[in-house]
Every structure is written in C-alpha cells, then in structure tokens.
Image: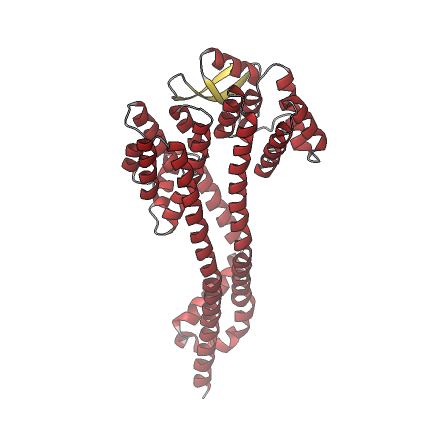
Length: 404
C-alpha cells in the first residue's frame, strides 16, 4: 500500500482534496469515481523520515513543451481518423525523447487496461493540469476529443509563444546586467586597490564616495565569497516561505498592488483563466466544475484564492460578474464583458473576447517595458561607471593637492 494525495470535484462542483492509502493510482481514481467525484489529480506522496529519500525509480519531469508536442500530435492523429490507442502508440514510436516515450507507454497501458484517457492522464500527476484533464474528459464524454485537444493545443501554444517572446527580449538586457556586475567587481576588487597607495596620504580628506568605494572593494576582496552563499540562503528562505499557502497569498496580493507590474500580472493571469474557462464551458462542463478546474491555470495565489470565493458565490446563485467585481483584483473591462456575456447568454464568447483583449494588452505593455529596459540598463551602467571613475579622479586630485 502507498499513500496518495488526490484532488477531485464533488457532486456539487466543490473542490475536494485529501489523502488515502491505495495499491496504485488506478485504485484511487476508481474509489473516487464510485463516490461520484470527478478526479483531477492523484499523486503518490513522498514518504520522508529524516533526510529526504529519492524514489527507487524516479520519473524525469516532463516539460511543458513536451506536453504541447504530445497534444498537437494526438489531435492531428485523431483528426486523421486513428483510434486513441493507435495514435498514442504511433506517438510513442515517433518520439525521440525517452521520458516522453515512457509517459506515452504508461498512458497507453492504462488505456488498454480499461481506463479512460482522462484517467490515464490523471495518474501522471502534475504533468497534466486540472483544466487539461477536464477538457479531455469533456471531449471523451461528448465525443469531441479531437476538438478538445485542438483547443488545448491552441491554449498551450499561446502560452509558449508569450514565454518565448519574453525570454528572447530579455537576453540582451541580461547580458548588460551581467556586464555591469562583472565590471563593478573587477573595478572595486582589482583596479581600485592599485590606487590605494596614492590615496594613503589623503585618507582623511578623501571624498565620501571614494571612501565608500574603497570599503566596498575591501569587502569584496575579503568577504566576496560570502555573497553567493547569502544569495543562495535568501532564495532558499524565500522558497521555504512560499511553501506556506497563507504567506504565498499575502506576497502575491502585494505583487498585484504594485504600480504597472501589478496590473500587468493581473491581465496576463485573467487572459489564461478566461481562455481555459471558455474552452471548458464550450465543451459542456458545468460552470462550477469549470471554475474549479480553470482556477488551476492561475499561478498567482491571491487570484486563485479570489476565484475560490467566486465559486462559492456562484453556488449561492449570485452569478459570475458580481463576485468577480467584489474581489477587486480583476480588471474592470474583464468584469464588464463577463456581465454582458451573462446577460446576453453568450458567456463563452465574451470570455474568449476577454482573453484576446487582455492577451493583446499584455503583449503591447511587455514590448513597451522591454523596449525601455535596454536604454535604462545602458544608462544605468554608464552612470555607475561614471560615478566610480569620478570618485577615483576626485581622490587623485585631492592627493595631488596635498603633494604640493
């Protein structure tokens, strides 16, 4: 027997989380389905006594790009008329990535053992998010699996393209920042000490900026090795703190209140959430279940907590737009479009419109910010170098005046 952590939707659409002992993932899924639950995830928990132990047969984490490739390939083969098992077998044969091939083989084995495709994906744990499994299950029930996979492929493509644009735009600023750091370390740790004998006679008359630079250079030479340790310790402490759900919600709520950046985060998150929610509603998933699964697409814990409150309000018959507006973190335009969709009976269409509008806004805002980042970083690097050189020249002039 092993311990499994599960996440499922109850009969009323409520999100249920817990743990149970079972021989394998299939037994967990079967037990929950007998209780009338819609299984989202069932993961084996890591048993830890003392130091963490690695599992005997670890599975390499499957990347988001690999899942996107799988989704595209499966959608294309199903549209070509292949049954699901043959499509999975074909993808496994064509894949040149061992981890993805092993995943496809495990999914295929479960499928041939009588499991549905959605249940086979659930058994893979975090590799397939809740909204992914939900859309696949809806496609199987409604005999529209090809359309559901095509929607999933589009959603994942948009996210991947956005991330790729950000990464490519940040390459040059990142090189500039590295150049600034390396230049400062070299100047303070190795160049500035060459002038210390010249400054010794004018030690008490040196400009404050020069004294600060000399102190910084001495610290780098003596204790520079501690800087990476401090950074690693700070990152580890932050990661540990983020393991606390309440602390994560508080931090993410503060991020949403930041000028410019907060609005950008909110619009990007709402775009992903609205697109996933629209896709699930279009597949026939009830609103309560769709909200619970679309919530899994939110990476901001504060917005995810708000959506949990919205779900409870929807259960009470308050509609969707009113609770979203009461949260205060959702863009006003998104709330208004959702209200129009509810009143006109075109909620799915309006949710897609919300996603498209906010996607465009985020892309434009990010492009503007990144176009400003390069000249700002360049200007900052010039100012820092000018400050260092000016401090050195001022100290040299002071030392020369003492010599005369």
